[in-house]
Picture 1 (cartoon, helix red, strand yellow):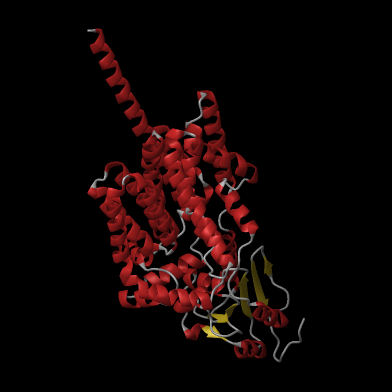
Picture 2 (tube, helix red, strand yellow; picture 1 turned 90 degrees about the horizontal axis):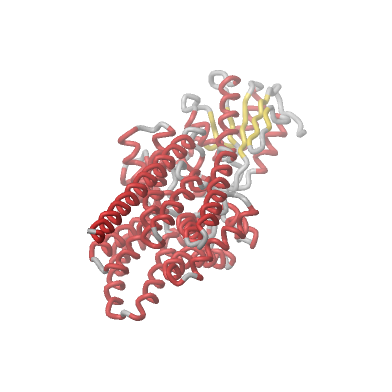
Amino acid sequence: MERSRISDSGAANATTSRRYFVVTAVAIVALAVAVRVREAGLTRLWFDEIYTLWVARLPLDRLLATVAADVHPPLHFLLVAAWRAIGGESDVWIRSLSVVAGVATVAALIQLGRTMAGPTAGLLAAALLTLHRTHVFFSTESRAYALLWLWLTLAVWFAWRWLETRRPRDGAVYVVCAVAALYTHYLAGIVLAFLALWVLVDLRGERRHVPAWLALNAAVVVGFAPQLPTLLAQVARNTAEHWLQPPGLGSLVNLARHSAFGMTALIVPLGLLAALPLLRPSQRRAASLLWTITLLPVLLCWLLSRAGLHLYSERYMFFVLPGASVLVAAGIAGLRRRWVGVTAALVVLVAGARSLALSRPLPEAVEQAAALERLQRRVAGAQTILAADTHSLLFMRHHWPQHERTRLLWLGAEVPYYDAALVIPHSWIVGPATLDSLARMGAPWFAIHTHNSGSDVSAAIIRIQSLAGPPELTLELVKVWLARSEPGPRSHR
């Protein structure tokens, strides 16, 4: 009888634990949805998102040709096209595809963390990612990053599951997720290569399973093979024409700061918590995998970019966030004294929540919206607006399509691919002759410039200011000019 009571008590405790886990997981996912939906509605679509949407509008053959002429794989553009066909082009709807991917990553992290480090670590890792301001931002931007992080998280999870069970279906799901990641962003290839190498090392004591793992990765290569000719052409294009600058040590520090909820003071404490699982025999194996697929790809991209291969961009490197969240959560969950672990978890979660609450919407989108509102009040009829850069042009053309007299003033050679040349009609591009003509006509005209990391457009800005004078509106990133020209040329100011 006593043994039966003990058994019943154990079953009841297990049921309670499962119920607590499920309820907490649902609450975390619900919170992830809430913060991301709210963020998605704070600003209008900006340059990168507008470019993605304009490509997604194209017929399938032109869409594929346009993406091939860029430097990205096609999967995200195809999904945006399908998403647009389902729900239209409102800003929140277009961004909701990334919201779904970001929330799905949070949900997947619960299971990844649970599998690798236990249920507490899984829930805490998901909570950390839910509140991480950088992940929230990219989960609400209509670009490929949130989708890439989802595929990589799933690929790691199912590779781990395959290692633990050798079940063919886990291996098959790994292949699907790995191929999808490669068709979403080429950076996935570096991460997956380190994952594949780590598994090979892990199988050194079970060599009979090595052929199966090699076969799974051969299937990944076969699945990606049709894209290889396009990739080679894109690599050549990126080598000859790019916007990325060689990274310095400061870029690595900045990546660490962003990963630490944007707080420099948390870099060392969170780094130490993430390193703790490497010191614990029960967590060391899983931690070594997560460190391998987070730290090593970043360092390799950084070194190759220093050598001139143009792979390192901070926004590309934020793929580390899911794995880093699991490592920090595992470090906290494994602390021996319960009160210390609870305190550490609360401190980190509060820091994340505070950082998220204080984060600003994307300044470029906010300021361009303010400039657009000013121009809509001032511009009459067929008056011309000159955009001194492609960021301003796409924003104006997308959010005020009724005004068809917005033109790009371009004084250099051809507009490069990274400045959205592939979606800008030649009829929208004008040179200095148009500017001089506007000055001679004497009618008011307007100009706008958004500071960004694309092409150098300083010559166009100088020409505009020589005719229009000081800006009428000056913000941190955006300037607007109103030129009330008199007939005849004006002198430089």
